[in-house]
Amino acid sequence: MLDITLCRRDPDRIRRSAIRRGSDPSFVDEILRLDERYRLALTDLETKKAEKNRLSAEIAKASDRAATAAKLRPQIAALDGEISALDETAKSLAPDSPESPLRELLVQSPNIVDESTPDGAEAADNVTIRSWGTPRTFAFAPQSHWEIGERLGILDFERAAKLSGSRFAVLRGLGARLSRAIAQFFLDRAAERGYIEIAPPYLVTQQTMWRTGQLTKFSDAMFADTEAGLYLIPTAEVPLTALHGDEIFDGGALPLRYAAYSPCFRKEAGAAGKDTRGLIRQHQFEKVELVRIERPEDSFAALETLTADAGALLEELGLPYRVLSLCAGDLGFNAAKTYDLEVWLPSGNEYREISSCSNCTDFQARRAQIRFRRDSKAKPELVHTLNGSGLAVGRTLVAVLENYQQEDGSVIVPEALRGYVGTERIARPE
RNA sequence: GGAGAGAUGGCAGAGCGGUUGAAUGCGGCGGUCUUGAAAACCGCUGAACCCUCACGGGUUCCGUGGGUUCGAAUCCCACUCUCUCCUCCA
Image 1 (cartoon, rainbow, N blue to C red):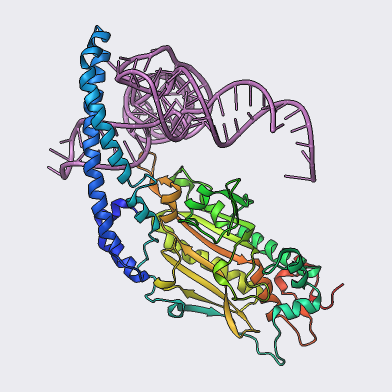
Image 2: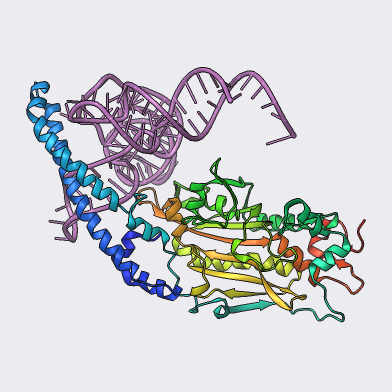
């Protein structure tokens, strides 16, 4: 949600951001026009209310209340008429009333693009910031993770389809164990880096979804039980970020760092025909999510740290990756700036996204009303929220299987995971 | 699922239909005292929005939404949530 006061103070900033995202900036003029009308109506309304309150106070102060009330009643009735009419007008225009077109415009607009986000219209314009590791050269044709997994008996897509249809997987034996090992490894590292582990609900209310910007209007991206009014989280970012909604922190409480391991549920409605094989794009996948709540002045430095925290996991696993700065046109709704981490997958001879780290500045904080005070007398200010995968478990499993595959069909377990998996090599199904 | 109790400021906890944004306590901030600290004492201490260059003024908010009334934290209705007991269950 955009800040109405910022729209008044610096409309050009909003226009510039819209243009960089590739959308028409004329809505800013519409916002200003509606806002003007709203404030006129509001001032009018409040003046009438003040008059009425004065008359009521007069009755309260009078020695003979009944008589005074009788005398003033016609005046008050007249004011009541005007008040209810003005009230309706003001309500229909207010930036916080659900029906108002002004609110619609504020709510539908994506976050303001940060200056440091590169220009560009689409994914091809994203800028590679750095890369780590050298993709391994294979003496044989590397296989895809589903070939490896099915042959080793640790991935079973056929039976998953029998149970649940397409875009599901069954992990078996060391496959299931490896997946659990990866998640455990991520959580342990997060704890070492000062992230507090949270085990959140996986079902949240519509309001919670709305607050973190996942629900704008009608979203067909998420699984929901509409009868119960509950949504399956598409990422733990949702409960972690909304955790402190409607709260005001003491300045000393910040920054806050949270990590949560959770399943994520997505309909993938817009992805028909994409990544239909294997674990890459599932209706249900697991992820360790990192969330930071920061003071505004610290949030961009925190984005660098967050991205480094995610990258360190890939480095420890020995998986080559690169970091992209998403261009303005490819940026998500909530983000002012995003770094994507892409891991090397030898079967496709390409890098694939395994983490996305975003600074959402005050955008989600405004929706969820997460604030802090610099000192005990200061006015509450909105915090900045950041989130990043640290990392997607399923895609890490893919990367491990593909990058560590051996010519004999076995897979070596990366050093960092051996303690969790309990073996150095996955050779044959038990 | 059944029965009961409750929802008030950062927290705890009062509150008669009339100047109550709300007693009191705790916490927080400032001050006096002190070499310093503690204690004691004094003062201040909720949020959102609108008008104003500013000083200042105004409106709204006591779970949410309606209603009664000139006037509602206080009365009425509906809803939501929390707690306790029973039931069920991993």
